[in-house]
Length: 234
Ligand SMILES: Nc1ncnc2c1ncn2[C@@H]1O[C@H](COP(=O)(O)OP(=O)(O)OP(=O)(O)O)[C@@H](O)[C@H]1O
Ligand SMILES: [Mg+2]
Picture (cartoon, rainbow, N blue to C red):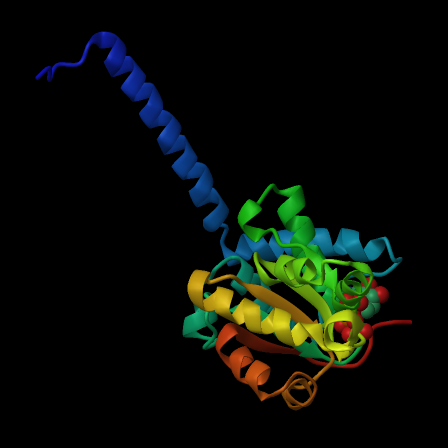
């Protein structure tokens, strides 16, 4: 058996190792952006985002706790668990009155991911009513359910969607988010798939609309965070 490497093999190994090392550094860079850095970037991107609507980005007593948690969560800060008693492996269920800043906060995280090329932060955002609209016009209805059952997603405004039309199969209306969310719970258990949700519904209202099975699953798949205050719309 040949044990000694030729000079070319040594150079090649060295080169390959350095690629691996470099990859590690890049991966690490994605993961180790600290909360301080995340907050700095969040403020920068949020200021740009809201200025497009002719607004100043406001941090006040109603949203400071929420924004602090959001930045800690997305920078995977262990304090999210130790101080705030959350769990980084779970998704986020953000509950709050209309207009408090839920949807825009996820759009800002999505923008940060895009601008800074942070793939690990990336998730698509889809309004729940758009999912129902797609379902209603699609012939292969199961493909819609499957599509939204796998991979990370942010479902915006859960509860604002109508019941879907599934006349051909069930002969009636159907709340398709019951199926999607139950599937996503299975994906969360099997693969740790994350779901982010914004909603105006309380947990009691979620149970009323989607049933006790969904509500029960929500407890184990989400960190529930409330965004306080009244509407910032004007
Ligand atoms: N921190 C903030 N500073 C300035 N403007 C804000 C802030 N948060 C939200 N807004 C503005 O308030 C309005 C409502 O924000 P957003 O759509 O994010 O609220 P929401 O909680 O998703 O509301 P809804 O529950 O009705 O969907 C938007 O015009 C947004 O630009
Ligand atoms: Mg919204």
